[in-house]
Structures are given as C-alpha cells and as structure tokens.
Length: 231
Image 1 (tube, rainbow, N blue to C red):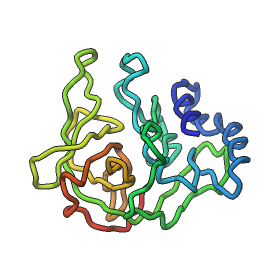
Image 2 (image 1 turned 180 degrees about the horizontal axis):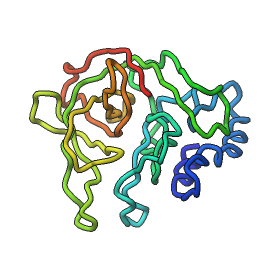
Image 3 (image 1 turned 90 degrees about the vertical axis):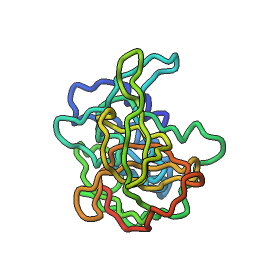
Image 4 (image 1 turned 135 degrees about the vertical axis):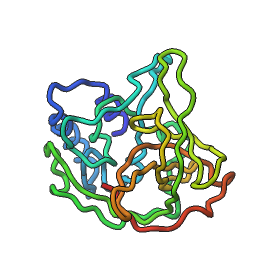
C-alpha cells in the first residue's frame, strides 16, 4: 500500500478534491484482501500508527532534487496526519528499515473520530481526529544547512525546550528554513520515530513534520505521557 501511495503522490491532479477519490478504486480492491480492516483518509486502521510516518520526498533515486516543500491544497481535504492533506511527493521511510516496524511501547490509539464512515473510499473531503496516548515533549526546531543545488533546506534537528543541544533529523512538511517551537510525539521504536506537532488548543495538535531522534542518547526525561487529539 505504501508503495502505491508513494507513486500516486508523484502525479498532478487537475482538481485537488480528486486526491482521495482518484485512489478509491485501488483502495477498494486492496481493502478486499484486508478482511476486517478499515480504510480511513488514505490509511488503514490496523496500522495507522505506522501510516502516520510519511514525509516529504526531497530527492529522487538519482539524487536529483525534487520540489523543496509540500503544499497545502486550496481547501482542506484530509486531517493533517494523513498524506492526503498535502500536495507534493512523499515517502514512507520506515519501509527501508531492517525487520518489521514496531510502534513505541508508550503509544496507544484510543479512538478514531471521523466525519465519514469507515471504508468510504470515495469521500473527497475527510475530517477527523485520532485520540492518542503517548510521550510528548516541547521542542525547538532548527533548520539545517541549505542545499548547494537549490538553496533549499531539506531537514533540521530538534532540541528539548530550554536546551541548546540539537539532535536527530526532522523533515518539516513546510517552511523548513524557519526555526520554531513545536512538540514531538514518540511513535516508533526504530531510531525513535517521531512526529513534529503544532499545538492548536489544549492537548489538540496538528502534524507539521516527521523524523527521528535517538532518545537512548539524549534521554527522555522531558517527555510526559499525555492524551492528545491529533487533527
């Protein structure tokens, strides 16, 4: 499924609202092999934590740079945690690791609240929230060096609030050259996969990036186990 989505993200659609409907036929056929599973906003409920870990593709197989930023559509069509919420090429880096991907022991999916029914493959505009319990921490994002080819910033790093030691690798969905405060949510075990979040209300967040930070090296005392809504 992730290979299908990666290849699909390379296409340009005339109408932005066609993003999810254009994939509906493939999703329906794919879903027929996943008995008892549910499709939601371009992802599958039984592995939705894994499906959250998409990021912008910044280079092709030959090393050629691709568009430096993901773009928001003219009007929202999917929650921020879905790859369908943006325009631009994406990839799922967890596919390249050795062995099966595993969620971090701390994270739990508590509930999925959506405005459409599960398995509504053709819904053009999907709204909803994932209710999650997981480790979060306030962080500071610092952009990395600019590319010599395009002068674009492809990734950056994170420091815990109040600290000056930056580490890890984070690819912001947009505005990668802008330093800012954010939150980190621990999602995966391998290299400690994290989502970068923006708080829009108390314990309510939007996704703004994806990356990794080795908590074995940097410690996790700054993280607290919190129930959040990811919209």
